Structure formats: C-alpha cells, structure tokens
Length: 494
RNA sequence: GGCGGCGUAGCCAAGUGGCUAAGGCGGGGGACUGCAAAUCCCUUAUUCCCCGGUUCGAAUCCGGGCGCCGCCUCCA
Image (cartoon, rainbow, N blue to C red; front, side, top):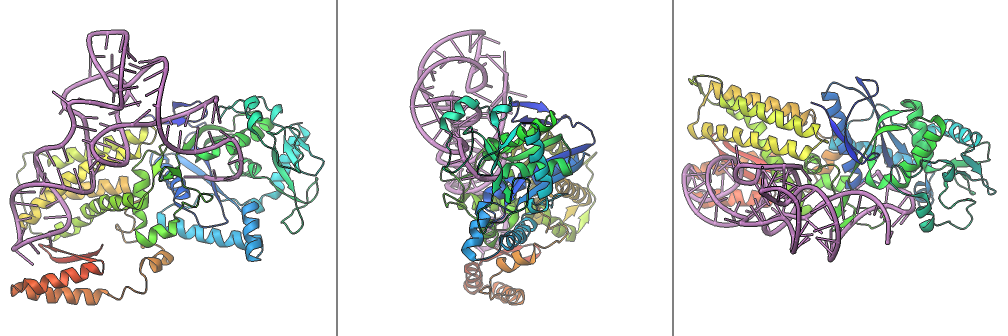
C-alpha cells in the first residue's frame, strides 16, 4: 500500500517515496520556550509524533529532529520581566515541556537541538550566504537575506514577491534594502544575549536556526519537513530560500502542515489569549483524551477546541478503554467449548478493521477514518462481552477471538496512536501529572471507597435500596461512579 | 485586496461520479438491572449552503453567488 501525502509544495497528493529507503529524515519546527505549551502546540506535536510512529510501523528507519527555539524576543522579554537570565527561562520551559510531552505520550525526537548550542553553525550559514551574494550587512550591523536574489521565493506559500512588497512593512531603524528581506543576524542591544560574530555582537534571527539544525543533523535534503500551517509563510518560505540558495538542492522533498486549533471560530494563540495549556487539560482529563481528540480530526483540517468536545471525546475514550480492559474480566468467567464450524466471526471483523485502519492512514494519514474503523470493531467486541456477562460464561473460542481483537487494538491504537499506554501494561503518567490529577482535596482513598462499596452491598442484600442508593449518589458527587457487574461493584473516576 | 482552505443530520465528522450518505456524541423506544451505570438491539439526513451547467447518473466535476476561517506581522 503506497503512502500518499499532501505536499504543501506541490499542493497535491503525492506518493511518498523516501530518497534513501528505508531511511526517512524528518524535521519539524518545535516550540519557542517562553511559556507553557498550549493545545495548539500539542496538536502539532501529537500529529507528528503519531506520524513518526506510523512510519516506523511501516518499517522505515526514521531519524526525527525537532528543535527548541531558546533565544528570541519573547524569551528575552520574559527574562526582563522576571529579572532572570534568559537561559533560566528557556531551561525552565524546556523542563516543563518535557513534563507535557511525557504526559501526552509524545516521544522525544532523536535529536532536539537548541539555538544556543548551534551559534557557530548558524554564523557559518550566514557567512556563506553573504559570500554567495544572497545576504548583506546593513549599516546598523544587522544581516539580511536579500529575497530578490532568490528567484524561487514564494514557491511554498504560493505568493508573488511583488504583491508581498505592497503589504510588507518596515520597522523604523531596520536597515533593509527591500521590505521583504528578513533578518539573519540581529545586532544586540545593551543587556541582550549576544554572541561574537564577524558582524559584531548579536544573535541569530529566527529563520536560520532550522536550516542549521537540518544541515548538521540530517543533511542538505530531507524527506519531510513539518509544522503548523501558520509557519508556511514566512518561516518555511525563508528556510527554503536560505537552504536552497546555498545548496542549489531541494531543502525538503515533502512539506506537511497541520491545521490550526480554533476556539470559538478563532485561532488559538497567545496573543488572542484564548489558549488552554496542556497542563490545564490534564488536570481535568486523562491526557489520552486530548490525543484522541487530535487524532479524531484530519491533521490538515481546523480543530475546533471546546470543553464540550473534550467531554464528548472522553466518552469515546472510555468506550475504547473499557473494551480493552474488560478482557481481564472475561478471562475470569467459566469457559465452554463451542462448535462454530470454522473460525470465530470476530476474526474477519478484526482483519477488515485492520485493513480499513491502514488504508485510511495510507491516504494522507486519515487518522479519523482509521479510528472510525476501530469503533466498529469495538462494537462487535462489546456484543461478545454483553452476551458473556449475561450468561456468566464465555466460550473458549469467543474469548480467544476477543483477545485477538484486544491485541489488534494494542497494535493500532497503542503502538501507532500512542493511546492506552498506561492501561496495557501499566505505565503511569508522569509524577507531575499525577500530582496535578489528584489534588489534595481528594480525601477519598481507595480503602474508604471499597469499604463504602462493601457497606452498600450489604444494604442491597437486605433490600435497603434507599441506603444503597444514598451511598452511590454521594460517591458520585465526589466524582466516583459505581457500576454493578457480574463481578461485583466496580468504581471509576468520573 | 491577494493567496490557501472550508460549508454534509440537534452537534462533531467521513464520503470527492453509481450498491442502503461511515463513525461518534446527543435524543427517542426496547433488552439487562431492585433502580442505575456500562453494554447490546431498533430509531434519529429521500438529502449534502444557494443558483445554473456537464452526465444515463453528482454531496462528489464545471461556472456563478452567499457565508465562515487561516496566512499576508511573532505564532504549532
């Protein structure tokens, strides 16, 4: 099955053919570490993490690089506000970023370069661009890339440089000779982070770092470059200009861009203030719920975020989780032999589901369709579960088929989609998350809950249902939901 | 204004020329239950923003409207 991907560069669906299989080189733009990551960042991270797992599943040897921007205006401003060194701010938010990634199941990249560790490489690129005549030193000491020298400028974002000039603006004090030119090196002002360079003390502009990271860790041409839709212009356009001006080779063969997260019809962003941080998400929900929400929408479509939708997604998640966890309960039931005259019918559903699942992913990574296929398998599993619970026994054939279905889901939803990792086997969310998930106000410990369940059970046996219901209602108010099953009363958090 | 994208049931969201328009949430009815919860069964769009056109046949292709969003400035 050929993987088809939408390539922003061509604007069409293309067969994915790596330049040097089975190796695949991927670079995605990471975050600027001046504050906690929000759902918008989370989406991009989850999408490309899942995509990487999928490529690995297909048998590719993926080298994945994702950067940290650890010097920039926003970090510097934050440092000024707090009277701290900018590196302290960057280090703090990188640490907090890792907490978030561990929680939402985003695996670390193979290389996670930081700007401050690559200043010589960045300076080298800028110097070469100057030598080749693509960049110039302005009178104020800034270095700019000369957009008009690069004839393909605009090919990614489908923009025409002449039209861009009309809308471009030049800040006072900038030494650009053309409004479209962008800064490669910024002369530092007093008190700002600065590095020695051939053009005096300064710091890199934003767009060069990604080129430097790619060249150093992946090479001159990579297979896939990813990032949010909002990075197409100017960031990725500027990366192409620099890299291709130097090498004359394509910088990235496939450009993948994820759609943005929308809140009440508007893009989630720091400046609009309509953002929800990942930490806020997982104090309220299991991090998998966000992961599931992200994968329930095609990666290129806008994702409308709302708490209502989180609630909805949580129900879907619980449905999946329950189907998987109930294997344990089914195994406790007495079994009997059943003459089916062939394979259990569930096996063909499993096969069909897997075919649909992988076909959907091969068509421009349609995770939402893959998920829909899985939901149909879960319905079939639940029919077996329902029957077994009702009869308080299960045929050995059904149990084996059910287990095969659970294994199939492990293969797809856990290994590729990164869900259910703390269910099978147990692998708890990070300590930080755990702390935030269980606030000190949660006075109900497990022993107390179990005791109340026992008392309720006694009440039920004596038909004192008013007492039994009182216990159930009260626990529900505390966020503990009781379910009476053939295996006794189970409880879970609401 | 330019460029990119979107408009499918109460809601979210698939489907991009042809069997019954996926899947989920919500709603209604039933089974199960002491009652619930969970789960299962049935049900919930004769129709896909509007108007034309192509075609034996269109939600799907073409033309024209209307509406919404993103980018064009830092942004995943």
